[in-house]
Image 1: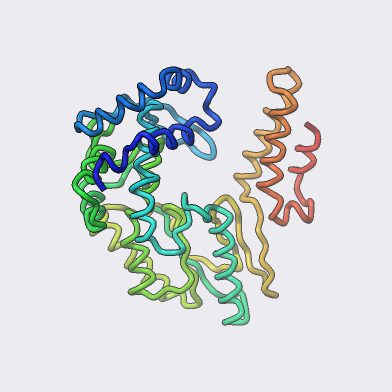
Image 2: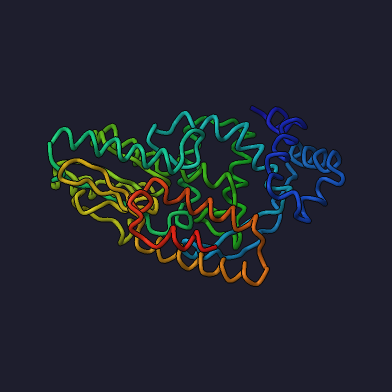
Amino acid sequence: MNLEEIFTFENLYEAYQNCRKSKQHKGEVIRFETNLAVHIHELMQAIYKRKYQLGSYKIFYIYEPKERLIEALPFKDRVVIRCFCDVCLKPKIEKKLIYDNCACRKGKGTTFAINRLHQFLRKIYNKVKSNQFYFLKCDIHKYFPSIHHDILITLLEKIEFSEDEMWMIQKLIQEQPNAANRGLPLGNQSSQWFALYYLNVVDRYIKEVLQVKYYVRYMDDMILIHEDKKFLKYCKNEIERICHNELKLELNQKTQIGMVKNGIDFLGYRHIVTPSGKLIMKLRYSSKQRMRKHLKTMNKLYQKGIVDETYVLIRKNAFYNHIKNTNEYFLRQTILLEDINKL
């Protein structure tokens, strides 16, 4: 596709509508839509003439669930990126990904990834008739900041994007704060799709060469399940080799081989298979501590009148949804629900 086909007025307008959801009260959104048609037309002309430049990144930190650096572009640039992702990046990259690459894809997400893991655990339990089997958990050291621009562009060129599409892709990858040759901004939607695809070479090697049946990935969190510990050690060495030699990535200290009966930490929960084959899902200790801290803070804000009942209800529902499928919810073995109901 050429730029004129991707960045039509209709496509940019639809991207604007998606980008403004839950943000219509913000000043930059209001300023953009006060003269909406003109702003969209200006974006179109700048892109068609290849004079379009990304704005300045707003840099800030978030601290939950852990400290992360966020680099966010102005609203107009987010509209352009949303349009490009929806019309071009998403359809082409989606076709190249394996089924069990679960993050940021339609019909998938954390619930899908957890269900797939549980499905794999049940299958291998039924095969070996016990919980005496193993998992390999791989995690990339500082994944987003470590993605190498030249390698990523080379990988994307294999998808056969058009010249116009590659012009925009290179802009999104290379026009970074501090002109770095590594790293993707966490605040860009395009970064999610690039990160999903960057490890595709690892996914394909695991599924097609190592022929691991029970494998699931959520962004840079990879879980392999197998009854043979020695085979998983071999898999770990192969994954390290490919990450280092082909992608210039390193596994971090959270990478480990363990017994499933002792639990697998994945997506905020600890997943355990009992000797009888029952699956238990518990909150990680750090998640419990973090939730208790949030509950205490929210209670203080409510007592002082800083937040209202509507906000409290939204947060309560979020906490309920986070724990409703865990054993803490059904057995009521923790203080979490009591703390929530005190609000």
